[in-house]
Every structure is written in structure tokens, then in C-alpha cells.
Length: 248
Image 1 (tube, rainbow, N blue to C red):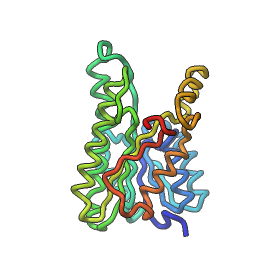
Image 2: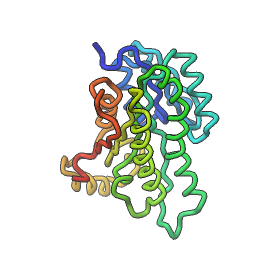
Image 3: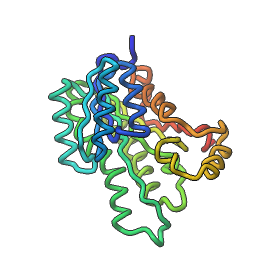
Image 4: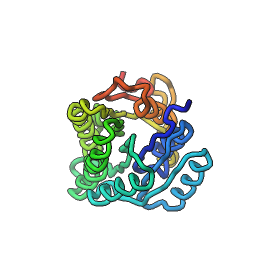
């Protein structure tokens, strides 16, 4: 029996990186996957094909999670198409790094909107369905930066720390209806984005991690799988660091 057999998951920002890793692991474990992407239509079409080949139902939706209206519309469309919404993975996120003295108001607002407000938008959009079903699992993607802060990332850190407060509040609000809400705080995860960085810098980061390596999208996806599945039926309001011991 696959861990997510017959369940439907919405994953935001899944055309690449961590989101794509989650979509692949979920499909392998039997979940039907509705995922969103912002601009990479070709990558989304390829992922859709790849997931369907694993024997599940899958569909990519071009949707901006930072928009309340688009989030509500997405949830309605997924419910109509898939019949249920059992899992929500709030993964959409961006960075616009800069020191406070150089950061523009626009760059601060944009990061808060895409990273934090999107979590509110999507959680509110699926809430009614999950309340009716009297079950559901919501997993919010935070970051070790949201736990400990980082120079040059005040906007990103604030958005990711905000997710932690939101997660714990929703866990308290919806627990009596058997809806769980947890957060994951990834550390240094090696994706297409980090591949563009200088190898020496990357090696320096690896050396500073107790497990001596960067994480993979699959490392994060496996913890996501645990939190989305019934294996974690008695876990809610928690933050799991997936960071190779970075914050130990």
C-alpha cells in the first residue's frame, strides 16, 4: 500500500527545485497531484507528463499564490477536477536579497506577498473543503533562515518566520477538525538555483554542515511525505528542520 494512495495534493511552486522533488515523491507514493507554476510552462508540461507516467492523475495550473482571487479559483478548480483536497504544500517562494540599507520597499513587500501572504491565501482557499471532509494535512515551507535570521535577507527571514507563527496558529484552530498544520525549515538544499553559485562558496557551506553535504530536494520531499501521510497522524503545530544538523 502506497502512503498517499487515493489522496489529492496541491503543491504550489512545483515546476522546479524542492517543489518538483515533492511532486515526484508524492506521485510515487500514489497521490494525485495538482501543482502550480508561475512562468515556466514548458517545465510544468514536462513534470505533468512525468507524474502521469507514474500512474496518478496530475495537472499543472498557472496560478499566482500571492493573489487571493487566483488561490480561491485554483482550489475550486482542483476540487472540481480531482474530487477532494487532502494535502496542501505551501512551497511557492522567492528571494530578493539585500542589506537593509539597500533593500527597496517594493522588494520587501514582494517577498512578504509571495512567501507569506500566499500561505494565508492557499490555506484559506482549501479550508472549507478540509473542514467538510473533517481531515487534511497542510505543510508550509519555511527555512532555517526563518528560525535564526540571516544578514542580507531581512525580507526573506521575516516572511519565513511569519510562516512559523501562522502554522502554529492554524494547528491550534483546526486541530479539533482533524486538520493538521506543520512547517518544514530546509537548510542548504542544492537545486538549479545553487548550481549557478561559485563551487568554492558552495563547498564552504557544505563543510560547515555536520553531515558535510548539502541537502537534496528529495531529502525535503521525504519529510514532507511523512507530514502529509497518516504516519504523522498525531503531529501538528511542529517545525521540522531538514538541515543536516546546521542549527544543532
